[in-house]
Image 1 (cartoon, helix red, strand yellow):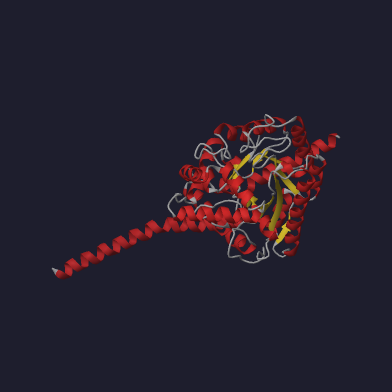
Image 2 (tube, one colour):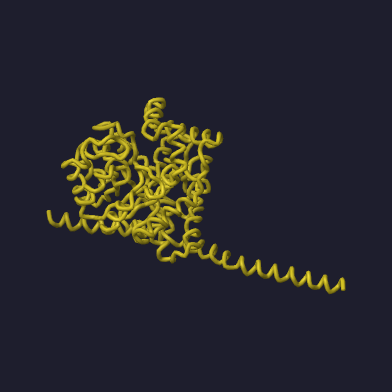
Length: 409
């Protein structure tokens, strides 16, 4: 009797073990598929503030750094093989000083790429990005984050384009001379006539029009004027998190209808409503908080970044801010895809310029997104589009419009 019971127990254990193996097999298969898919795709991030770190003595793009979110070793680990380095300065700096500071940052990007030429190459077209991928190199691109950096001089659009800049965000945190920002009081009712000329000149120069940061009216003005698709280089979905920096469903639909792409931002306060509400309560809101930090740091961008991180860590440790999982990024991707289709969604992390959710602290974690989308039932083709192909398609369309407009001159 005892031996019979033992045999039954042994058989039961064997059946349970077999069931567990069967259950685990599909998961392992998905993980393998996700890994192959991710590391064979062009993974293009349209917005990284890593440029600010180029001016720090303790930062080396070619080595793994103890802090921050982006460097070449972690890009390799996470499969990020195309990156837009953001050219950014405080939006209240205008005129010639703004131009000078922007040129300093463009030069810093070009020098860092040159110094890491074994791994990285400067790209200015979609074809350049594809060529870099085929050669096993990381494509480095540039986007100017704020129209104030042209110094109210339309000629700077041409100069920036000649230096390799491939998108410009029409405004940043504050209104500039010709475009209203989402985080400032309206001053121009969207785009001024000069601002509309800027958009037209960007079309001619093959520079993508980026509407992250702009007011809703500025967005619709730019959409009407531009002959090429627009991008939202680092914005998320207002339907999930009601932040002025995010896009409403109607805006996302309008963007997509013209062939554009919304690249989802990973910043905690842009992707999680509970976090945004708690953060606003503790800091007085993003506008007040940034004003205070800018004054206390005396306009030092690196200081502002450090203080933002310290404050966020302190408030989280005190339990005043909720934890936010990286999976919220997937929620925003999924919402946008369900709204307008997989052809109009991309990735714009805001690495090195924002507070990242838990589990997506740096670019080495990016394969999680591919696996999560695969588990949701997304096709490999649609995932490749989201990872980078959609942005490349917009680049190609912008390049075609540029050639057509220049041929008409």
